[in-house]
Length: 497
Image (tube, rainbow, N blue to C red; front, top):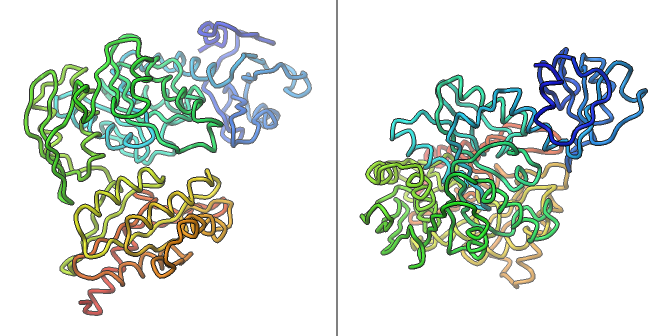
């Protein structure tokens, strides 16, 4: 595609240099530039200013660069076209959409946003669409999936250029609908700019990501951007959440509210939960019926209601929706049970990595009346420090034993992160015998499982589906489930009782 054609999708643009040059693709990494590429000089928070890599990109074959401020010719090199725009994020998203043939316009795109529940809800929606015979794609924290492809996802919501490329591939593969997680980062950084959503779902809003959003108001506003982006379709809003009414007010189209309260259009009553799953009576415009899910916990009832709202708004029959809720096996790393053979205790692995999500999981497990609830968790480095003592408090509140360990320390000192967690326990005057600090995560998991006895539940929280640990700038293989299985095998070999 020619640059002159590509820039027509932008309202405000200044082109400095030849416009009649071919654009063979886009690159945000100077090391991956191919001849004819446009180099996108992002200035995204937490990333290096990409403008410094323009000379390297040009040397690699870039014939144009996308920037927010015109640069001196010597900084870009003679003959290379500068495309100057007010916002590189927005411009790159719109141009990528045009370059790849506006794939979102050929798909029914369902966007799911919220602090918790995005992954499970988006998976349920995808299952419902597939069960109705609609070829469906899935984009989210765990994976990117569509017919013939199932690969790990680098981000909850990929960068705009990569996202448009993925959507285009889905169209080529015959996909007709997409269920995708839309993070507040993606909304604030305009990664989904130019995408026409058929449905927007809001699950809830907690105190996560405050290292990225300066204020809770900014976080709320970012989430509401998805609601406002659905102009011709429907929104699905958790009306029980404190910010639910605001999200409903942000909607520009039909809004399906869901929750447990009588004011919800889609609601659940007479809820019963166990580790085996949940059971409730579903009330919605299409009728009422008793529903059983293999997903335990009240929070999963909310996820089921959210997915029901999205499916109903897309015209799915109620019997298909209920069948999926009954048969779904859940999402890897979300309340995932690890086989403990005949040892008599249970091991659960979950992605919960905020105080709110930890409380959801631990409340659910505590309600099962285990002999002891043993919790293993840590906190990620280079993330909001204020969440750490809160997580410590929640773990101590619901657990009979707590093992505090490392998670993904990234560039922080793991022991410093652990000290932040312990501060919450000290503040609450938690008995020191309740918790044990073991920095090595594998050792912490093994010790927790070794301590477990018949009737206990061991909850390993924070990493869920992740099969890696980030230490410094290095990503090493590490899977909580594998470590737990190995610990269980060792116990079986020792004849544990």
